[in-house]
Length: 302
Image (cartoon, rainbow, N blue to C red; front, side, top):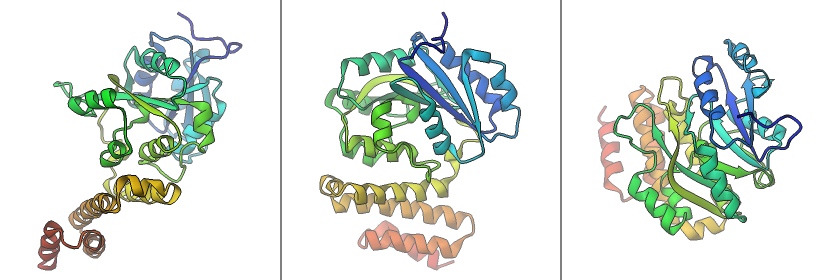
């Protein structure tokens, strides 16, 4: 089956931002091109790669739309791709993961029936897990589909992966797209901003497969934790009602845990002064939590 011609407006635009992943990119593209849902276009934005990404992409000819920009980060590359999109729905894919064959069919069929939804998302699984472990635990996945998504669900654990989501282009643009200052926590930030303004729905189904490898930017522990803290602060600043919904104690608990993990990561890296600073932040937020006090005592002993 053929992809929509350049003259026809597709229903969905699939946007892939990539940087120096030519060895994995082809498999990702093939998983998109083999979708059972056919009314889509594929846009790939090369964010300044220095490998043979350009040659890989050019080999697909008019089966995809290829753009190149100077390296500005994944969020900027995705925003550029969304700006080029002709579809009214956007699917954002990573350049190292794989789409299930019914990925777009599952998400679009649901979104088409729920006309007020700004974002619909589903579950994912790990490519290298023979047990079929899912990103969102199966019991929680079932509950989210049955009872609906609440802010606490998004806040307690980062459950939204852009690779598992379908976004209304109009809605996405209305909230300013992805935050280009974020390199890892953009999924969480976007989920918060969608949820606080528009209905969000969830489907209890695996629609993509996550590949764990050394090149994952998400493995940068310090950056992940710092961005997570920044996104929480941003949520409260932009949406004061989130403070009332979540409660100050709940917010402080999550922030303190992030600072605690940051302290442990820095201590392991030999950055002892920075580790102590992070731990002091955790204790300030939860002064009576003995675990953090004990860890501070252990740090002081070395």
